[in-house]
Length: 538
Image (tube, rainbow, N blue to C red):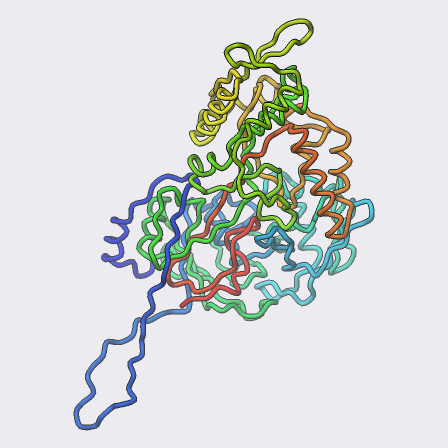
């Protein structure tokens, strides 16, 4: 580890952080500005010049940390911190900006067939690998086939790729099993060189196209990445990135607190307890991790859409985000990321609507008894509105969400209870339909495809609807942005009216940068570390 000073470690020991869940961040403000050059316009020769302290040596590099190191292969590493470090070395065909639009990186353009089942990707020409060879279509085919092999990361992004082949040296053709909206957003996985071999000693064996290349070890537990002069978007603003091998998460957090590493993320640091220094900066993005309430549409109680929608209207989403997620999420009543360019919900408040829910319940045949508990007649029998909310007991945050919803339902006249169980039982019961309601979380694909959640071919809720299936298919075939937005609005509104599930919120994730880092590209669903050629130091 480079120059880890005793004083720095003392600061680290006092820097108190704990946990690993996503929580609240209190933004720091202000930056330390140091004047390194004194004004010498009035120098005199009558007396010797007074000695001044030498300016601090500010190097044009940063340090990042990794722990749980396994391999620098971005397709095989299981370490989040290693994936972040690989972001300096490897690049995708497309990156994703903070509004969930595709940004070409290694791709020049992408065309989609009229039926939405064929993608033709044209590569940028003249992109050079770190070993001096040129990127070609074979590299893309090799990467996709490795991912589709089933043992690599990013499998969810290529799950709908039925085949891939080279049309020519700079053109790749991908066949899809079903149409995909904004399919370019699925091409956000890192590209590796055809036939890459990632050895235990990565000097020279880690070859990417990114702004920085692997030089090799610069210390016992440190690697150096250097700016790649032949990078297709120009040489990076920084000269080097030092990658320090850290034994565990606690040490990682301590070294970030002591400014020995310059970048950290909410995947490592608990944002509910983290207090950033005034000269550090927290940058959030709204991820596609959606928390929702799922309905068993096969049950007699939730067979009709009005009852499901009424329950959804009883969820105080703003209260859940504020008091359970500590504002580390954004409330949503639609299954659409609030940061997406397709988002159309302009409401500022998402509190419960008990009066609206009561109207829907009455339309569905529910009536309150003398104690205010809803009931209705079903097959000549009186059936009370009684439900259990299934939740994974291993997730305290989800348990609190279930308890909050349970309280709201009880106040409205629904006899509700929370049913906690271990993860394996939780998954088994959802898959078998043995539940009334459940609190769940899912990562929606970056292109916003809702087919796994709402398509009739199979979902968590036993739900099917031909109109929704048609809208899902249209999302993958329309080409004009205006048409895509119109179809997206129709789909989200239809899903809200039908409510096979009730979106609650989308979680926020963060990158935290130390005082040394001056500028960087904002994190997004394609990674915390992106467009690193633009990163710079003070």
